[in-house]
Image 1 (cartoon, rainbow, N blue to C red):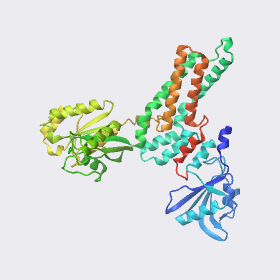
Image 2 (spheres, rainbow, N blue to C red):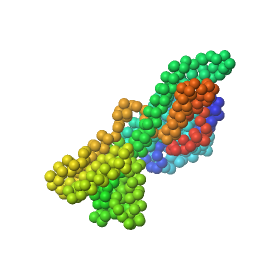
Image 3 (cartoon, rainbow, N blue to C red):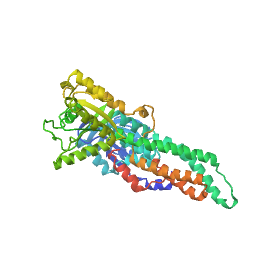
Image 4 (cartoon, one colour):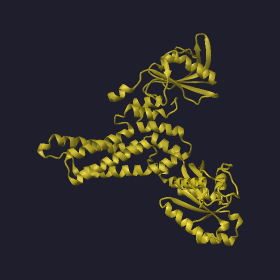
Length: 470
């Protein structure tokens, strides 16, 4: 561990509630620090009569927390001795009854006797600073806690097990070896010698470039899975966009009315389908209008579509026979406006049209889905289609998927640096010039896992997003 990290590790004991605040059956209070076990020993009487500080690590003890002669609660105390603990320090976890009063009594007792309140994420920050996990794994802890779907949970677990670190560790080590050889060449610049094998160096640079590009490209998909895949529902007024949203969510989220232009602003909510979170966005009906407020809503509809991963373009089956050319033109316009988006065309209100009309719609428009949002006809088909459009193969194959914006920025910076190295080799420029870019690439790759000195302010920002007990 370098001196920079050592200087950041606090030596005092910290305490916090590790379970959600409020009343429950059980609450867990966590204490970490070299004096943690000694501090708790002074106020814990074990039913076995044994001293807590003399017990083995990873053991649980039944007894009472006392203050003087007053018994505060009967508790279970778990001890974890350094370095075999979450933080790498001595850790004590007190499982008490879930009364808010009891929680505060115990916490206040130890605050008066050698502990201080932990800051947000300070337990995990200490785990990182004590070498129990790298920075990317520490950040993944917050993602695991915040995960709200099977997909986001799986990505967070994969990251917590060292996903991106494993991808970069060996490549960074190899690049570091070449960097050392190239720096050595600079020391012998007057003798025109090459210690670094240029052919192997080119292969490494190519491999690093490929890996970085793949990780960067995974961010769009990973970020969408983590936060919910945005699906914009667009179309003319009164085609059933709000009804479809309400049916998907199984609640009256949006106002449904026969009056055109009812939806003036975007309404959205989340639904988890087969472990994947989707954010459905009901937008204002798209049409020509002189209403200034409605025009703002239509503008927002296009903005939501632009930012969505998937677009559902809804048309009214009742009007298809009389407005076929108009519909075909509108569909072409939407697809041309969003050429990089997957546009799913749906004909709504099929319960009100004949079989002949249904066949006509299916014949005229490729890959169209027929449904009735009001009667819930075809909804299950839509849900299956949505999950099939999401490429979750990378999840099942345990591929590394980037979901963290800080990692995304560092990867882009590392890629820019390694591309400069590649150009430098091809142009046969002076070694001392592209050695700067090698160091830059190493720095940005190291910033992801914390192998490179990370600014204390950056660490503070990262861990401030954690809950206090973690």
